[in-house]
Structure formats: structure tokens, C-alpha cells
Image (cartoon, rainbow, N blue to C red; front, side):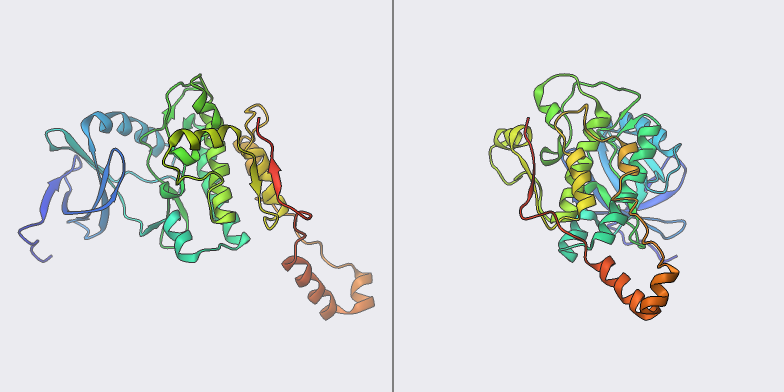
Length: 312
């Protein structure tokens, strides 16, 4: 292995592995910075998440719980450095080239089939979390990574809760928070995750957020989340529209659960029935195939105008 340049910092993790650290910040969040590094034993490029010690210890506890779930849609913690600096620690994760926001910006409009695949994989990971009493509480485009095969990996468990069905703290990203978080009263974190999944699905389908996040006044954004009718464009696939209506439901008693999402028509489209013998005999096999293709490619949009989800 060639010698490392003298300006590259070398750090040693708890496993004993050594990593080179690139000081250039790749991503920056409110409470963390992500740098790139290299495992000097394997030569693999990795992501190094730099956090304060106060954040490190509770997040490590949650990540340890998440690693036990062993679901391919959940990020794998490779290693960690406890004493990088007096007040800082480092998590070592696999490096992913892009997140879902970057993917959408690059492709602009996603086909319904791709939305179904991506959202289905996100929900697969979220169902595993909820089944093991973990609420993520920060689902958003930036926290969904895509690997080299375009498969989903959920990251960033810094705000997650384990084993609590009711919490009171405000957390998450403004555009994705559920309306009940804005009422300063106890709420169900799992139902809050389902609202955030609704916002995520909306963006995947429509290419914009259901609530304007460019407002300078945060209180105006919160008012929209609590009261503004949610308009679903008529171009959205009917099965997706139905799912959005039960995810972006302000009444938490009526809001969909992970079980409802996984069994939805959108994630489980009805298979096209095979042509009958009578059809084959009357019009011939080539005509039947052509008709089937026309049916698959042209779903019926919602009538006349956009569907509005009523405000409470």
C-alpha cells in the first residue's frame, strides 16, 4: 500500500483498524459533519460522521439496537472512534454516492414504477424499525441513501427513539414534521413517522413538497402543516393518491400505520389477469398482447381536478 500523504490524518477505531481522514466536509447537518476516509487495511472508502460526545453516546446506543435488526434497508455501523478529539467522536459507515434528494434533482421526474420500488424499500426498513420498537423521527429525502445498485439505505438515527410509544420533544425537519408535534402535547412517534413517509411519497410523486419550505417565517410553515388543505395533483396514480390521503391524515386515529402501508394497493398492485381462451380465439394472441400493453400504460387519472385532503 502506498504511503499516505503527510497532510492526511490517521485515526484508530475501537476495533483497532486505522482510517485515513480527509478534512474536506462532504455533508454538513445541524449536529454533525460527514467526511470521507479510507480503511487502511482494505482500502475501502468510508463515510466518517463527526459528532460531539454528548450526541455520540445516545446515538451509539440506538445504533447498537438498530444493528441487531439486520435489515438491508438500515445503515450498517462499521466502526467508531471514541476519542478523536477531547469533545468529539466519529462513526464509521459505508460511503454512498448520493441521497434521494440528489437522485430526484438528477432525474427530475421519477416513473411510478421507480417510486413504488424506492418507497417500498423505505417502508420495508421502516416496518422493521417499528416492529422492533424504533421510531426514526427524521425521515426525509436527505436521510435516504441509494447504493450502487440503486437500493435504499436509511441513515441518521440521531433523533430516533427506542421503546417509547409516547414522547413530548419536538424533533425532525420542518417540512416533514407531523401536525401533532406542533401542538406541544404528547404524541405517538410511530404515527409521526408515517406522516413523514407521506411527505416523502408526495415529493417522489410530485417533485415538490406539499408545504412550502422556502418561507422565512417558520411559524407560517407550521400553520400550513396544521391547517392548509393538501392538494394532490390529478396526475398522481389513483392507488398512490389513496395512500397519500391516509398518510397525510391530520387525525392520527385515521392515519395509516406501517401495516396499512405495506398492504396498500400502491405497493401491491393487482396483477393483470391472463387472457381467457375465448379472447385468444376471438381476436388472436397478438391483438390480446397489444391490448394488455395499452391497459398497463394508461391508468385513469382522478377526474377533472386535484384531490384536496381536508384540513382539521
